[in-house]
Length: 193
Image (cartoon, rainbow, N blue to C red; front, side, top):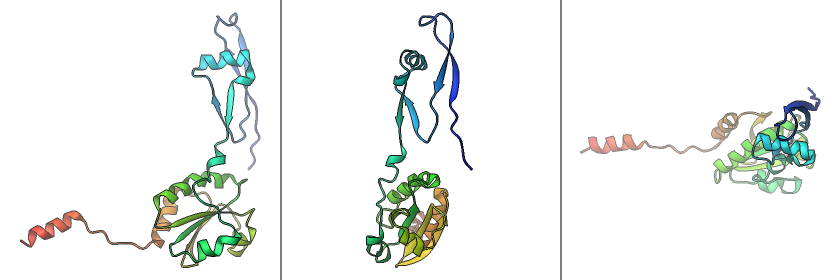
């Protein structure tokens, strides 16, 4: 499904101190995946500055540039040592910079990386830069998340899925330690006296 960017025009009433009760058309910027943050603090200041100098109204910020910062990238050269020979389980996200759903899942992968530090290694593979790895594991859609343990593929998830789905897959792979409830332990001690 393709979306076409359509410019939006809005009618704005200008305060009488700036103009004599007239309505001015202000053309808003097209949306193309960037967020527009106004520099002005209030709406009145925003429209006042739009009338004076339309170029000063907006500040465009691309938030997608910093989405893949926390999780290291992996390439053909280090795949064997970082994924297949790793003692810990490894989660690998196959992605590409042009993929919208991949950018949606990046923050989730970053959160999982922080959440499972020391228990799970997490890496990203850019399928444009490392097509051999993607071909070897039959990646046909991105994003695809694969979990490896002892060098073998154990699970995979295709598409931009919620964090809970990935957490469930991770929890199936990780070794579980049995937690003893403190209350049961205290009851046992009290009953043995």
